[in-house]
Length: 181
Ligand SMILES: CC(C)(COP(=O)(O)OP(=O)(O)OC[C@H]1O[C@@H](n2cnc3c(N)ncnc32)[C@H](O)[C@@H]1OP(=O)(O)O)[C@@H](O)C(=O)NCCC(=O)NCCS
Image (cartoon, rainbow, N blue to C red; front, side, top):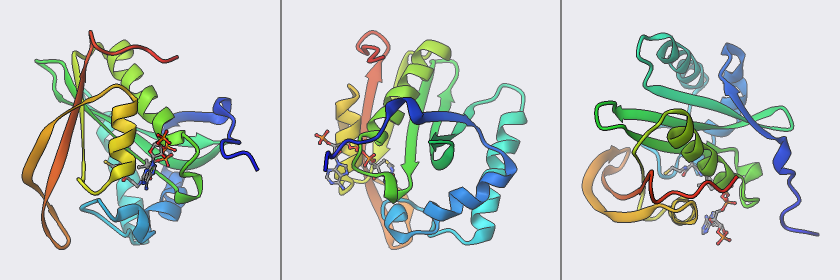
């Protein structure tokens, strides 16, 4: 069987709808998805609260949170997020989460590429960064593949369920980035 049998044209994103909490819950309730996250595994209330908060955050003036539902063949399979953390200095942060049933097909890389394209082309950002757990080799690989450079290791910047955690910091600048699409 071919490893990469997914059809790129079937990967889409859109704004979240209230009823998407069920699809979010399908992946966010799984311990494997939350291994490197400070949240989860989600209860039903957690998944509902996540979608409600995303919807509220997009209604505010000067929106800074752009969290999109990722769809494959019209099914919500994850979240891709761009946050403008410094509007004055045109800086943003990306993150992504996918349902484990869709891992290993290049979709994570595709989502990261689309988030960078959105940040640089649509939002006019100058710098985009991302962080990941030092043990999250899949995410670190994605960030390198999409053209980000490792800036270093932040010490104990995140409090997890089992204590303080370091994070690797990656970034890419507008003039370094090549649009892959
Ligand atoms: C991280 C995540 C998005 C990866 O998604 P994915 O669709 O499987 O990633 P891709 O298929 O695009 O893989 C990208 C690269 O990472 C590698 N990779 C993916 N998962 C890996 C793993 N667990 N261990 C080692 N390498 C891995 C792939 O082999 C590929 O490298 P290659 O092109 O050199 O072969 C997914 O595992 C996920 O949602 N994890 C939970 C949430 C999370 O950790 N998000 C990131 C927060 S920083």
